[in-house]
Image 1 (cartoon, one colour):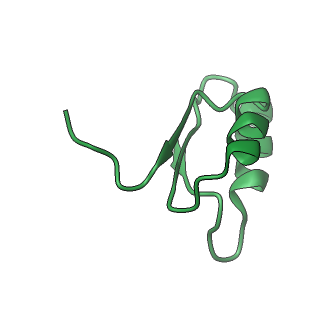
Image 2 (image 1 turned 120 degrees about the vertical axis):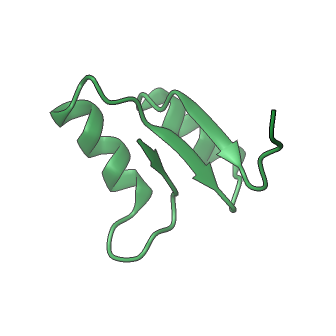
Length: 59
C-alpha cells in the first residue's frame, strides 16, 4: 500500500500503525513531498518497506 504522511482525514502515521497490525501481508510504502530524516527513520522502525520523496525518478 502506498501512502503519504500528510493526508486529509487520516495521517500516514495512523495508516502505518494500522496496516502492519491488521493486514500483515500488506507492505507499506511512504511516498511524500515532505521528506524528513527523522520521520523516515521512525517509519522504517514501524515496518515501512520504503520511504520515497517526491518527485521519484522513473526507471
